[in-house]
Image (cartoon, rainbow, N blue to C red; front, side):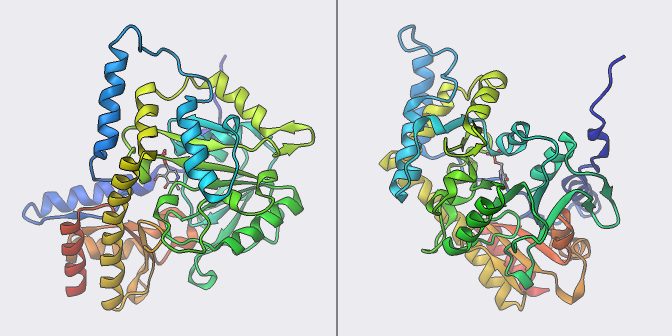
Length: 404
Ligand SMILES: Cc1ncc(COP(=O)(O)O)c(C=O)c1O
């Protein structure tokens, strides 16, 4: 008789976005004349850049020709893409990453969810609170998190690192020693980030206690300030303690096209065992590669044209972020984020809960955002707006909120 992985039964329902969807649907049915503006979900809206489209067309044509057709891709990904990544994402920042330390994938969600497979179930994880839910849920599935305490919204065997106004939306080194530390900068959902000196403290700490840092840099392209690290490997000693995960979703609009990569330096070891070898084994066994046409499209963002065009897209979103940030500040809201990330994190007014503010904004301004409490208990009393809408809708949404 087969048995299921009962850890899945411990997962609380995917409450956040389904509840948002239901509430918006109900409101729309009752108020068909109202124009709703959605600044809730972290999905891009601009089409792929012309350089990417052109690379896709060329790659499709190659697939139509006997001489240039491609079958299974190389296990780690095409070398032309890994070389472009090594040169443009790392070498340009003074960091040397070897091509066999880069693993091309279909995105950062899969990599951040799957990476736990190479670690023993008895590792203790530490996460920021609020947090991108994949880090926690994938560890629940693996049986690493203990029991869920519904009243607290927490797992018994997870170290939570609160990121609130009091901590400047950055985590503090935990009192209890973790084995695996998940960090995401620039951060989803708070839009915050930390300086290179602050990240260096985490690297030093991880090396000291023998922890590994899973560093999610999916929003790296949105960094606008000078002293913010673009990769954790800018910090000294990071190669012996950190895995970095990247995505093409937010820097080049690949949310529906799917491409990402993970870097595991060969210096990162448990005893004599390189984590790089374990991930190579896992990748080779369970993943047959991102499609050639998508990898070719990914490489096009590193061309001069691709860089210019994707930069323009990011500037467009970050202009929206500025509109939201400045508009809400002028209206008296306490606002953070939106400088190095496409997310604006605001304190709900008048001690409203995150969900009360959601209902209020939907009803009175017909604007949809995301309640902070959906990302973790320390998100209660906060609210996330995203800069991924159109400029016109963003302007209108903020005008409406200002009029409340
Ligand atoms: C922090 C973070 N990591 C990873 C992802 C997922 O990236 P991908 O589209 O590459 O799977 C997201 C998407 O919103 C995210 O916010």
